[in-house]
Image: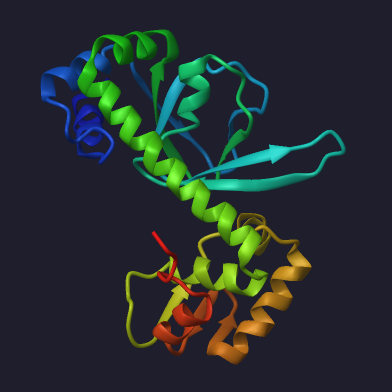
Length: 229
């Protein structure tokens, strides 16, 4: 890898606690690939040849079924790994990966990565910690799907687009409404109804700009932050 790519990897939360020597060793066979928007990185059912990490951009993980149905399961941002469980267990990918924006992707060859995890306790700890955090995120999402309405899930998505927790704000939708609908777990027509419902809670849509009149009130509506931990 180029020195600037290695420096970018070292800044990622996933790897920032590793020593420079360890980081240099585990990335000795790594590569960085640039992808355009809508490029397919791998497909559901492919063998996991490498652990991939987003350096820049965003990647969507999609699941499909035999009749052609497809849904967006997850959207990955800079610093996040692609389905590490498949790489560690050498099982086929359960999802496809497609770039939602121009992206740079780090690839760590699977065989070498598995060996490094077995031989380096510090890297193994990083992986266990990351997988544990991801598991907690998935549990929260499953709970939201089962316990919250489409409008509440959409409200959670919108709140996640801003770092503000008080007052009002305007956020910009980073993806098409079809992608957002899949991420929220609804059909596109249901998303439109959810936006219409949220108008009564101070949410107004103008193109890809969404104004939120009262962030605390919207958080209260979708019970954000009220879960029993």
